[in-house]
Length: 142
Image (tube, rainbow, N blue to C red; front, side, top):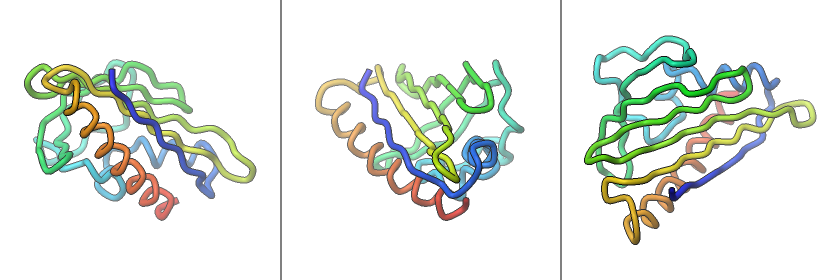
C-alpha cells in the first residue's frame, strides 16, 4: 500500500495536541484535504468502532470516504476507509511527548481503485504536500 508519513512539533502538551488533531469539528481549520461532511455536521468525538463519512478532495478530485475507527487510545487514532471505485485508505494520527510540547505524526495510506503504479506515486506526492500544509496549519492552531 503506498503511504506517506509527516510529523511536526507543536507547543502543546500531548493530550491537548491529540484532542486538537483528532477533533472532527476542527478538521476544516487545518486538514487541507477535508472538504466537508455529507450530512452537514461533523461526527462527534471519535470512539473505537465508530463510523462516519467525510468529504475529501485531493488533486482536485472530490470523494466521499467511509471511515471506521480501528484504534483509539489517547495517543493514537487509526482509521481505515473505503473510497470510490474500491479504493481503500488508512489514516493514523499519533502524538508523543517532545520537550515542553509534543510531536504529531500523520500517516496516510492508499490502495486499490486505480491507486497503483504511476497514479499511486502522484497521489502519494500530492498527499505528502497536503500533509505538510495541514500540519503547519495545525501548528498555527496549537
